[in-house]
Amino acid sequence: MILEVRDLSFSYGDHRVLDSLDLKISDGDMVALLGKNGAGKTTLLRLIPSFLKCTQGTISIDSVPVKDLKLKDRAGYMAYIPQITRSAFPYSVRTSILMGASNRLSMFQSPGRKEEQRVEQIIDLLNLHQIADRNMDTISGGERQLVLIARALMQDARLLILDEPTSFLDYSNQLMVLERIGDLVKKGYSCIYSTHNPDLALGHSSRIVIMSEGHISFDGSAVELIGTDILSKVYGRSIEVVRTERGGIVCIPD
Image (tube, rainbow, N blue to C red; front, side):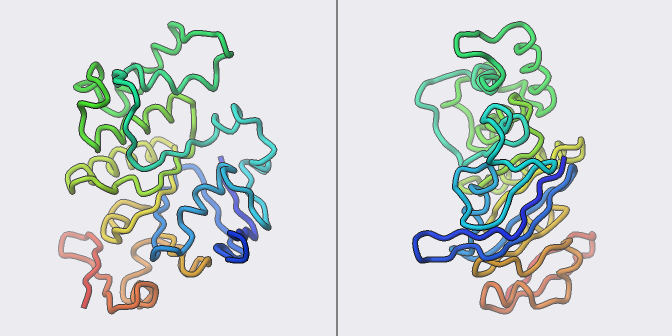
C-alpha cells in the first residue's frame, strides 16, 4: 500500500498553512512529524483521511484519490487516531475494540463469531490480555491509546495516523505506545504520527519529516540528522544531534 501526497496546499481563510507539500508513505514506514506549533502537522494528518478538504493538490492511496473512496472503504485503508479521549460509557476494552468492526457491518447487523475471533487476534497482537476485560475508564493513558490502535486494526486499516499519541503520557507509557506501534510496522503496517519530542522520534522512527512554515524542510532517517543544524534552524536554538555510545541517536540542546 502506498499513500502519496502531491503538491498539497491548504489555507484557513487567507492564512496558508501548507504550501505545495509532497510526501510518500509505504508499507513498513514509521514516519515521525516534527516541527514547531503552527507548522502544519495536525492539518496534514487531518487532510490525509479527508477530514479537511485540500485547497490544492491530491492525496491518493494505491493511485486512488482518497476523497473518491467511500467512507467504509477509506476505513479499510487508514485510521485516524486522535490524542487520548475518554469514553462516554464504561465499555470494556474488548467491547471497545469490537466497535472497530462497524465499517464492515450493515446498519442493523451485529458482530458475530468472526469479529469476536478477530478481537482476540488483535488482543494477542498488541499483548492486551491483562486489561481485556477491564473498563476503559480504569486503565492508564498509555493502555487507552493502545486500545484506540487496536480498534483501528479491527477496521482492517493498514495505515495508522496518530496526532501526538504520546501527549499526556508518562515516559514509560510513551515508550510502550511507540514500541507497540513499531512492532506493528515490522509486520507490514505503516504509521505517520506527530510529536513534540525529538528524542522519541529519533529513537522510534524509520523516517523523520520536519515541517516548517507549511513546508517539509527535511525527510530522511535519524542518522542523516547527525552533525546537521536542521533542528537548530527549525526550533530557533542550538541543538546537536549525536549518536550515543550504545548506538542510539539523541538531541543535545546548547
